[in-house]
Amino acid sequence: MDLVWNTSAFLLVNLACLLLLAAWRKRTQKTNLPPGPTPLPFIGNLLQLRASNITATLKQMSEKYGPVFTVYFGTDQTIVLYGYDVVKEVLVDHGDEFTFRGSIPSADKTNKGLGVIMSNGKRWVELRRFSLTTLRNFGMGKKNIEEYIQEETEYVMKELRAQKGQPFSPALLFSCATGNVISHILLGERFDYQDPKYLQILSYLMDAFRLESSISGQVRNPAPGSPDCLPGSRKRRKTFSTIRELCIAGRQSHESSLDLNDPRDFIDCFLIKMEQEKHNPETEFTRDNLMMTGYDLFVAGTETASSTLRYILMILVEHPTVQAKIHEEIDQVIGRERAPSMKDRLQMPYTEAVLHEAQRFMDLVPLGFTRLVKEDIQLRGFTIPKGATIHPILSSALHDPKQFKNPNQFDPENFLDENGAFKKNGADIPFSTGKRICIGESLARMQLFLYSTTILQSFCLKRPPGVTKIDLTPEVSGFGNVPRQLPLCFCPR
Image 1 (cartoon, rainbow, N blue to C red):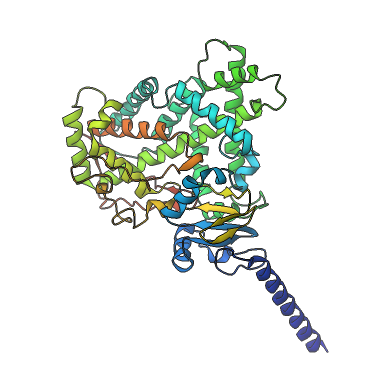
Image 2 (tube, rainbow, N blue to C red):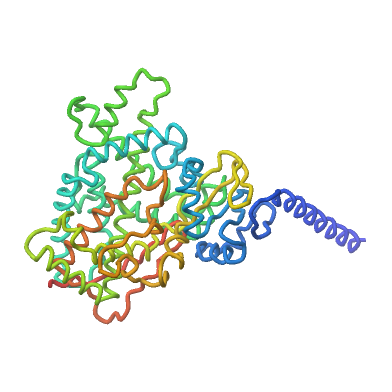
């Protein structure tokens, strides 16, 4: 009797699973949807996506299904765009139709649709326009910010000289420097490199970027409603609350000393805008949006620039002939006495090509940010339904073999023409492209040029004694490619 009962129960469970799978497949196989792997109920294609390197898995799927295909992250229907042509078609050619940001569960729980990165609609338009205008007015890409970065490089150089050519990991030092540039723009102040509270904030930021790109981060983010008990959730909350406290303290001190006719920094400009719109019941210029916009700018502008600078120097250690050519260009254009400036950039095509190629090769944010489809649309013969998530894979443009010769190798020639002049490439989109391109691109490129040339003006970069190779593969690869924190030798030239 027990055997009959157990057999019947087994058959019923299997029948229920088959019926559930059939219903799910019928639901997911909507008319004219892009092809893709068959999803399982509730978990979708998560078992088919290698959490340690989702980008590589998506590349394999694109080879089978084409540049536009459907993947289910849990129950979330996602249309993946793979390759520069289709990424450009969506983000640039039809950019107005794809300005809505898709959901990122870990960010949604902190940002709550506020600020400039995760907001949408009218709020995003107004906050982005204000942020761009304010950053430009305070010198993003202009001379006064350049002078501030040059001043910050002096602190960096002092720390590097103190190492006397001994192995030294510059990760925290570079974060201190790039964080101070953002702090100057936001708060009008800089922090000492030994300030324990500042070091704590930077440590949280570094951990947060690593966690978002880790396996736990990749498991958590594709699954809306994922619990806060998953690994890393506590550290994410701590990072948010610590930086939030910094922004709130900055706002409070600025409110008490605000001069409506003489704004000192970004927070002052935001407070003045709040005053101007205080009688507008639909204003987006609120204290909550000020706090979150400040948080967005600080987070986005600190660890990304620091990690990229560190990776550039690691690449130069592994490519000594490239480093030697940059040394030669620096000596010819700048010399050894005066500080590098942005006016030198136009006369240093090889250095510029190396910086662009290093960012392409590094592929800092391979997956990019998702977009949300506002209305049913037609894309390359397929019907993309309203509410679907579009995922343009930035890595697929940066490594597109149609756009770059030997895309998986580091080669500055990708950005040089036959005469040795710097050559632009439309597929060079490490900051994304289209309407929602990173608002800090010009600031980041300015920092990378000034820090790199200042360091190379005085130092030759070498491996530590006994080390025969610097590992350029990411420490973790997911939302971001996080470079390893390895020691380098900064040897005086």
